[in-house]
Length: 235
Length: 119
Image (cartoon, rainbow over all chains, first blue to last red; front, side, top):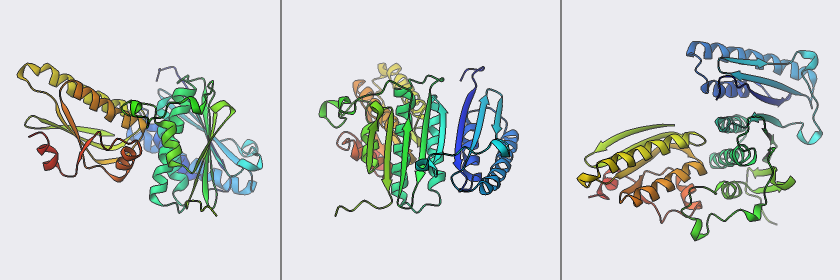
């Protein structure tokens, strides 16, 4: 990370959910990228908890459908957590995404760890079996890696936006990048004997193996993945 | 992720701990490449790298991590060395099974057995 580079990460949460743990987990992960002292990290964590608690209260007042967007700006020696003031906090989302958590990242591979953190937090209180959680985590990391590395080619000016939508029976993850896209069927099959010993090219295969459905939209720049709590029964 | 390097006779053991995902996989590759290089420098003593990758404490591995295991396997073989995997957890095992690589890697459940591979 260049010293002058400013990294802006945004996290948008539905007002219906408790913000504190997720915000705290994301901040803790971002701090790992810095050389802030432990003492300062602890103080930032406290501030994040405070900000999250306030936002939850404000969010509850705003009612269903509202979102709170936290803007986290990281430079080499500073982390700013911007929690919009009451009057400007809430942007309303179309109904499809009103319960979704949105994470927007600059395209640095370092940020793929945030996907792991956010998925873990979102599923913390959902009763997905342990094995299913691990599959979702892996698929999210693979999708994030694809978007940042292959889609956006690690261009820090391009963003990867990831939506996580938790329903009673399933988790939907939608990943969008700003790259040129790709055609799924043109990607080589990693199980083909001639590709078995290749050291890359398994990302899409693993996403499809781990999730119940993976669909490619907008020329592959939008990927939608769904995982059900229970394996869907074919009637 | 953390990697601890230890030696038992002519055998090098890497104890890998944590999540082998994202940029951390490059750090693992560097450690392994360094071991390959060191063994190569000592090659006049006909020492080839005998490497055990202990995966017992690996909580999670992604396709980049798996790629590092495969690249290590091919690089070490090319240098006449050998590499085995020790104590695959459920996650890593299912990753290797899914990628149809179980027949490629020699896997052991105990360190004694893994060491036995080289004797």
